[in-house]
Amino acid sequence: MGIVKRDALRTTLISYVGLVLGYLNKAFLFIIFLTTIEIGLVNLLITTSLLFAQLTNLGSVYVTWRFFPFFRNKEKKNYGFLLFNVLVVCLGIALFTFLYWLFFPQITSYFKEKSPLFVSYAWWVIPVGIGNVVFMLFENYMRGLFKNILPVFLQDIGLRLVTTVLLVFYALKWISFPIFFSALMLSNLLPALVLFFYLIWKGELTFSLRDITVPKRFRKIIVSFSLFSYVNTMATILVVSMDAVMIGSMIGLAATGVYTTMVQITSATLVPFRSMTRVSAPIVAKLWKEKDLKGLQSIYRKSSGAGLFIGLVSFLVIWLPVEELFSFLQADFKAGIPVLLFLLIGRVVDMYCGLNGIIFSTSRKYKYDLLFTLFLCFGVYVLNLILIPKYGIAGVGFATGFIYVFYNFARSLYIYRAYGLNPFHLSQWKPLALFGLVLMVYYILRFWLPFSPDLSLAQKLLRLFVIEGYVLCAFIAPTLWFNLEPESAGYARSFLQEVKRKLIKSYF
Image 1 (tube, rainbow, N blue to C red):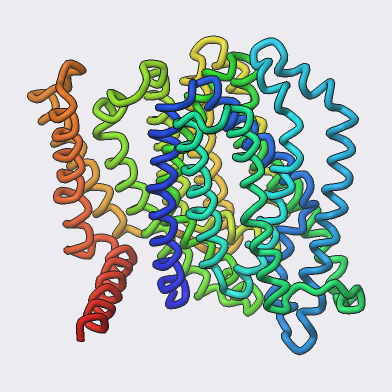
Image 2 (image 1 turned 60 degrees about the horizontal axis):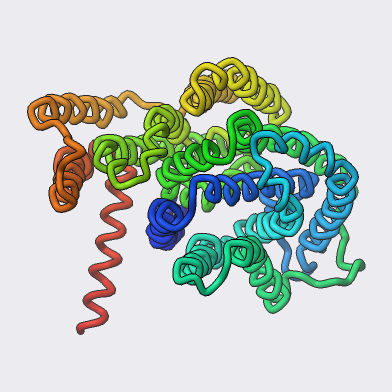
């Protein structure tokens, strides 16, 4: 876990800076300067663009991080592996751009009644989708090179800084909403462009077809894996997109704006965990190559422990002051409170199950993962159809949270039965017990000191500060100090030692 710790710490720091910018944009500036309809338009467009990107990659993205360890050979220019996948992506872009143009009237008719504004901007799906798929390809390739910092910086900081600037320009009325929207969509191409020129500069991307020398014995395996991974991940992305698309077509853009804002808030909980998985993915692929089940068990269990701690902390930080937080938002957003709860529960379980997705998808039994993903997709769709008419976006939140809990535990059980790999450990009861105690004490105190919307701004901020301080002192500090979750405590010690070393170097 040495490489994982070092790179994950760096990417986590970058991601947290990006998290602050993301919260500034989506939780404050968007809500202050945009209507819920405009927020829904932006988020629905980005969501459908991610779906377009998933379609166009044709499985190349997943082939990259699964098989690159077998092709990494500097003398042979990595067998032209990157150029081969770039050509596959170009083919996918051409194919699905044509299909999108061909079926454009049918696609937009789905939104005409409840979200007519989306129809006017629906063509932006293509350029934004292209930017996303190219970035995903290059990012996964750079993961294989163990160069995670630049892609994370571009996506988490660079892109969000551009968004902040555009929001300020729009707030000052220097630009109109159509110009703001167009510039925001075009900015999604910037990370991909930077990585494109960076890889050319480093000699990783050449344009000679002669460099493509993938051995024949790998071709059948790659095609098989890419096909199943393509369908499997297509279903996963469809689940993510399905909620926003169904809300946009069945309720409207305002409800889409509220729901997607809740999704973005809960997505912040995944920042440190995603940093860990970014670094872990190529290592897991390497361990499978070496048939090192002991190493896989170690990284699996450590990721589960760290994921559990991250998930529990995130839940406490966001959910305990939920009334205080929502008192700063527009009244429309209060409908998102139950959505937030259900999605947070799903996120906690997702992180607790560790690297089950990466381990499953890089194993020889990766084909069976498709069955779990299809169940996930079908389950969310059916529950949404049943619950949206009765409960609105709260029903969508419950459907997604519930299905993710079941999906993750079922997949973890299959991995255990197939390979004997188990992410869970009896010692994990310690942070779980402390979490339960912290919740119980908090709600007892809150019964005596209830929140009132009539409180002044200073009083609301003070309550918010006190609650987060309570989480720090009652859960985070004891867990790390008493080593209740060893992996997270190790991260914390490594971080403090790195800070101490740099301070000593700076002053002495």
